[in-house]
Length: 80
Image 1 (cartoon, rainbow, N blue to C red):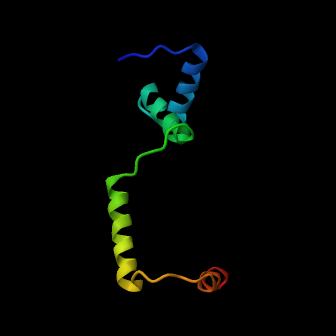
Image 2 (image 1 turned 90 degrees about the vertical axis):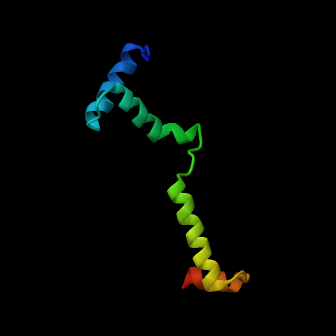
Image 3 (image 1 turned 180 degrees about the vertical axis):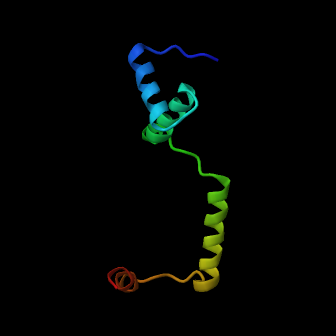
């Protein structure tokens, strides 16, 4: 698939390609999307991140149970 871009856009893509050592301008477009895309579209969490989050939650529940935390306890932890 080919995408038509204006001259300035092509130059920007070329600079991004060279700056980050990318293979082609398509990779440069992907890099720009990675850098700025979250301003427009929220990224999806990876399966690995979700598994890690679940494991962390399970460890926390095993250690602390489902008890609540008072404001005083939170302040003590935050303020040291």
